[in-house]
Amino acid sequence: QFEGHSGTVYCIDITPDKTRIVSGSSDDTIKVWNIAEQKQEFTLSVNSSDFNAVKVTRDGRKIVTGSDDCSVRVWDLETRGNVATF
Image (cartoon, rainbow, N blue to C red; front, side, top):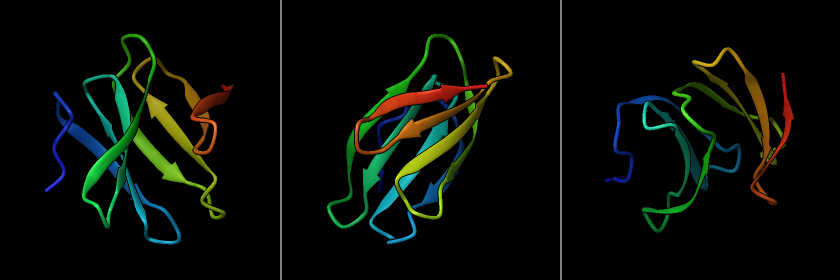
């Protein structure tokens, strides 16, 4: 069981290598989970924005998110940084 969000989980995706789950929530966070260890690896966030869409890229290196602030963001899973916002 993966516990850690303080709000409703709206979306999930799994990396192509099936080692991680990425979840988006109403608690304004994206969490990245290690499936084998069943624990949270890290959290990505922006101020006051529910995440309601998340998709891992085919190469498994980035995620794309959609949020209530009408933005689309691209995140790098290695650096854990927001690399683009639309």
